[in-house]
Image (cartoon, rainbow, N blue to C red; front, side, top):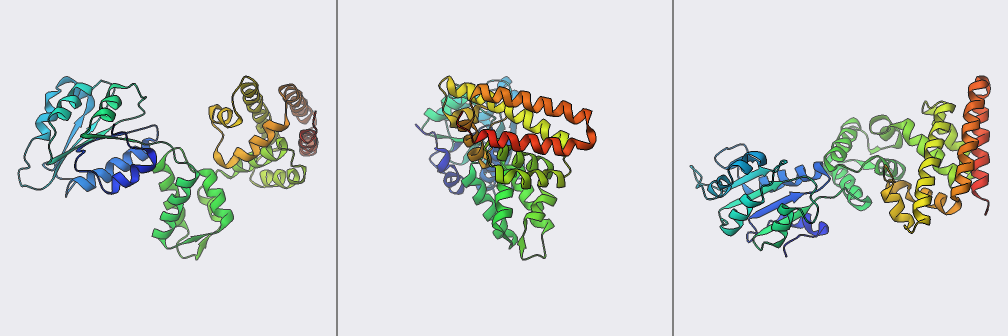
Length: 342
């Protein structure tokens, strides 16, 4: 088997194995797929812009002419030098074309296949994972450790430091797509040029959706029962531009999500699995607070909390001048209720 573990992919990219000239790069993180494909191309040819050194084939075109891949693989470069073939998989099955080149690989040409998310039974993935001359490189969304390393690498490249609170906030705003994350960090670094370090205000100004970040802070504090933090988080949400109605609406969405996750847990899911299956999945920076909330609330109590928030929302519309006080009082009441055992 030549499936490469996710933790070993970067090592393979840094030093591709010559005995595995056929490389499949796939996964749900399209930005990471593209980044790793580009790195493999740079490692395989002297000039990626030279069409004689790098042949590009669309997958759907290859499906109509499977023999083209093996022909391109064994083509000798017109002016010498290293050669590679880049195939971008599409909707059509190209496993038969890849199978042909696996049977007759070239030690002088690397075949790089760029694909999206493939399940274990997908013919292309299964073929490359089983072949000794091929390597299958999975690209999954970055976890906290990978994102932290990405921040460190970009900060080092920009010769900048970042404060702990700014780093923590930045971690919470990244993930899901490597290329998008890297671009956000570079944008932040460019904005902060001339400073000794990046501060929380810089992250909020450049990267953060400040209002969403503040809404997450107040709802997490409420349902985790952190009564001492509710007022300060509520103030941050108001300062970020969120209205009292928007804050209560965020709490209603959060209680609905918690109710779905709690039902899944009572059906046998672990807390961790329920948070991953949520739509959208709970970001790792919020897992602790959401986990505390799921332990504190039962489904029945969450339904009562939903009714309480709906009543508060109606009362706020009827008494607009008192909307802020009503919202704050309701959230504090819910936070206190979260601390109760039943």
